[in-house]
Image 1 (cartoon, rainbow, N blue to C red):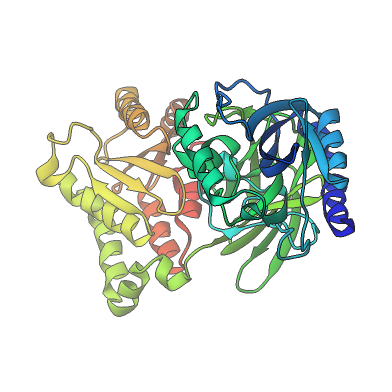
Image 2: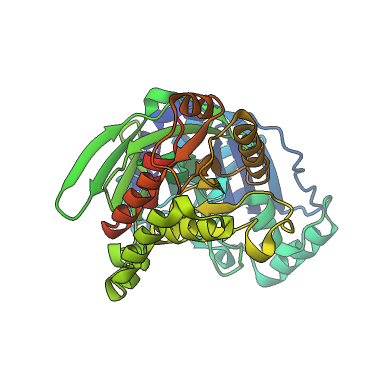
Length: 471
């Protein structure tokens, strides 16, 4: 019994400093009566950071020797239940339920997959993963599983079958023990006759990396957090690397925002990422590491495979620069659009000729070129025009086109650009008018610089910041 007590006490000691995260506990239990005493079959105590308001019904089972119940516990009662478990029993629904601990040790008192605890509760462990949508119920936290003897040691097979039949007749009915354990008790393991009885406690910390993208030289993202956290509870340790150096910094996330996931909030963060090729982010909640996220951009060669074409066909930059030089005398908008699309392609963008060539007037989304940065949520609407002066009507038309694209691609940040390959500079009043409607003007000299940037393997996000941002 002493080993079992040590394990349960270890769990309780870990939870007490974080008690304000969980207003209540959801206790769901099942027990079998033997010799006038209720013996635990499977019990799950889940700490909650939200106020409980679900419609789950406790099944009413007509069997004299099998008990199923549910009780919502305030924090004080959670502590009392876990403390009582040290002495081999707990009280639920007015019934004293005996707990069995046998062979307590790393193999039987262990972490569930969800809790991801190490053998002796040294703290939660992170998952090494790329960013992924993890269901809130699977978020990392503390967990305890204390196993007892096999259920078959105190329930004979015939009685077990009778209880299964009673579950089918219960209100609401359950299709046997697997259904009961998965959808009411919510234990991590199925309820089987020859499996150990068990007492589990799960305390989800409910915090993880939720969203990320690279934009204008920054790694920006959001954390998914429960409502009981405060901004000062969180911090991110960031290790950033490039070929020649590694930098380390601590980032404090911003305030909290609403989140589409029910009963959760978001906390935004931003980390300078200009020139880096990888990041290793560690999320800490009050000094406890609860999640880890690794980001590694492709190698320079694979990141922009157009470089291989530049190396193999060294006349491509020469031909493009010659085309830029000839642009002022060009009378073909299609030719200029193809020129700009080529340059964007070499800079690593994915480019669509939305209203060019055979698609002109047919796409239903009126813009010349639409370029996407494959490594961030940036997109660019580009209008390619001849060299005549720009007026307010032209600028307004590009702004309206961009807003139309933005409305259809709400998850992206869409920028407005007018490329004028036939001009080296713009009049001050043109630049002022363009800035007033958040449109960036790109000249012939800018296009030349973009070709040079492609040869230097500049990231598309940096190109966006240098040439397409109107901020």
